Every structure is written in C-alpha cells, then in structure tokens.
Length: 484
Image 1 (cartoon, one colour):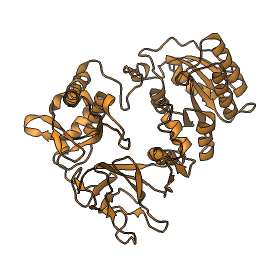
Image 2 (tube, one colour):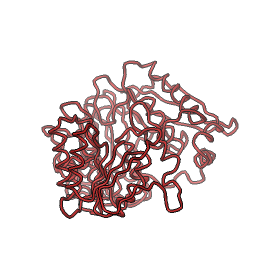
Image 3 (cartoon, rainbow, N blue to C red):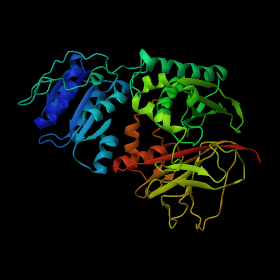
Image 4 (cartoon, rainbow, N blue to C red):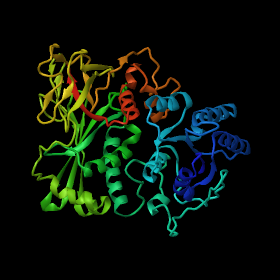
C-alpha cells in the first residue's frame, strides 16, 4: 500500500506515520500544494497512492482545495472510480457543513477527527483497502522539515500490535467488522460449522434471496456477545444471497430468524434458523449444535463466560437496548391486511423516535410523528406505544399488498426532522449506473438534504446523526402479512 500523509503539524504527521509506516510505502507533505505535486508525480510514474490522509487547515493550500485538485488529476488521467485513492480528511473541526462539503463536493471517503487513534484509522482502512497479510518494507520519504521514518517508540518497541501488523483479508477484499477471517484453530472450526449450517439454507432454496434477522436468545429474545459473533459469521457465509431489509426483490425473499439456547447439562449451545415465507409460514428450520469448549476457545473468555449466564438471567427485563415490538407480541408476528397495528418501543434513556413502515413494495411510510405537534419523545421504563396513547391521530392499519412489511424505528437524544420522501429524487444508495457507492460518502451527502429518495431514508438518518456526532439507535421488526 502507498500512503501520503499531509499535515502542516509535524506531531500529527508523526502520529499517522507511526500507525501506517509498518505496512505502507509512506510519503509526507507539510502543505496542500506539495501534496498535489507529489500525487501528480505518482500518477505520472505509474505508482499512484492508495491512501491520502489530508489535513484541512493548512497555510498555503487547505485540505478542501487539495482534495478537489487530487480528484481533478484522477479524472484527467482517466482513473477508474474503483481505482481512485482513498482519501481521509483529518481535522479538529466539528462543523457539519464542513463535513458534508468534504463528502458531497470534494469526494473524500472518510472524515476523521483529531487526534486520530490507531484503532479508528485501521478500522476505517479495513472498509476501504485490501491490506496485505504481512507488512511491506517501509520506504519512508519525508517532504517536510523535521520528518522522520521511525516505526518504533523511544524504547524500540513496535508501534503496532501483532494483530495490527497482520490483517488477513477475505477474497472479497475487505476485513469483516469484528475481526479477521480465521484460517486455522478453533475460530476456523467454528466458522466452518457455521458455513455448513448456512450451506443447508442455500442448497435447499437455491433461487431465493433472504432477509436476515439478528440472532437472539430463545427464552428472553435479546442479542448478546455470542449472538453478535455468530451473526458476523452467518452473514459472511450467506452474503451472496442476502438483501438489505429495506430492499425490494422480485424473487420474494425468505426471512431467516435465528435463535440459540444454552444446554447446561450437555455443555453445548444449539442454534436454530427458522426460514419463513412472505406469509409467515415456516418452510424450514435447520439446526446446529456447538460445544461450549469450541465456543470458549474460538470467541474468547469474556464471551464464553457470558454464555453461562444467558439461560438464567437474574434480571431479564433490564433495559440496555432500544427494542421494538407490537401489541400482538412475538418475534415476527403474522398480520392480515387491514388489521390495526399498535407498535411498541422501549428505550434505555429518554429518546426522540421516528417510526416508519415499509410496505411489501418497499415504500416507507412515516408512522410517528405524523404531525408537527405530535410528541415523539419516549421515556425509559415500560413499553410505550408509537404514536403515543394520547395522540389525536387515527389508528394505524397495515396497507396492501401482502408480503413482508418492515417496521423500523430510529431514535436519538435530539429530535431528527424526518425528510420529505420523493421517488423523483436521484437515489444515492442505488445509483442508476449500478456501481456500488461509498456508503460513508452517501450518508454525509444525504445529511444536508430535506428531500430524499425513499431508498435513501436509512442512510439519511445515519448520516445526519454522524454529522452531528450523535448516537443513532435503530430497531427493526419484520411483519409477515397475509391477505385478509
């Protein structure tokens, strides 16, 4: 990997150098005009940069102008969209307009707030670059006064952990969130068992795509460290046939609903995948069983110890998550068209919630707030109805056609204004040219809009809260719907 670090502060360059130099061919620049000249030279020599870390506030040419110049150079040289450099803007500014402008107008890939940590930088890199398994020899060249190429701390120790120095990459070219792809040992054995379970699903329904619901504990219906780890493995094994929860498919996706149960007497965990058709009928239920010893060795002590507590929680009603349900109850309750719908939410702290219903055609409808004077602030504690019980609005009914309908809620500590949904708008999430977009770029571009395409709604909420540095809570519930 070839990397260019651009910052007028030597200490900031040194920090990024310590993170990147062990596995990159690194160059440095102390101003935007120097960076643009280096980038042009690299293009001309056939050795372009894969990554550019670009500061915004610099004396002669700031980061925004340098970003625009770099993208112009790539365009003039006919660099394909997928081969363009990954550009991270690094700055201490917290200005949403500044952030949105960098994505929408300049075409950067990430916006990192200083001080940049190794964990954040490598996490972002894993989404954009296929890092090699072993570090390439660092050929560090500095184009700034006082720059050095040290890859160790003053005591001579490596600045990267062994995990940072060797980042395995799957054939798809990106490191999956939550860890690398195992190739041997207990982790590989667990991944193989999950792959075999996924194979039962893929082989039995070879022509159907799938919606995926996160795995939950069978008795108390909540996720855990174990279920999240299994989710990552299953999603990876099923990735070629999964469609997003708000995405419409002409091939009638089946719904995968996973649940696990601890068997203390057998020292094992069983995992069952209910396969539901669009009317809620269970058409299959493949199962797998996993030894506690294998899980313990593959996932680590903290998660394995947690497993012993899952089946007999002392306080199963403790509220630590944002939850969504209906008055009918159940994980994926089956409804009939025209039936009244009473959504319920439970929050860990006071939150403002926006609730939507995607019908079977994939069109979202805002359920709450339905008017400007409707209070969508939810208090923690018991289950609360959305819209609120004292709402003057009429009751909700499930619209036609029959099939999977999706109830999805977004919540935040501040009210997020729902955008106007207009099918005439250009979709950034699913562009007409069919090329997969950069999701981070899509999110930040949508954060500045008051009107979006319906397929961009999820990215609008994520981008708006990210731009404001707020946490976004999400909860989803599939509703299989039959004819009346």
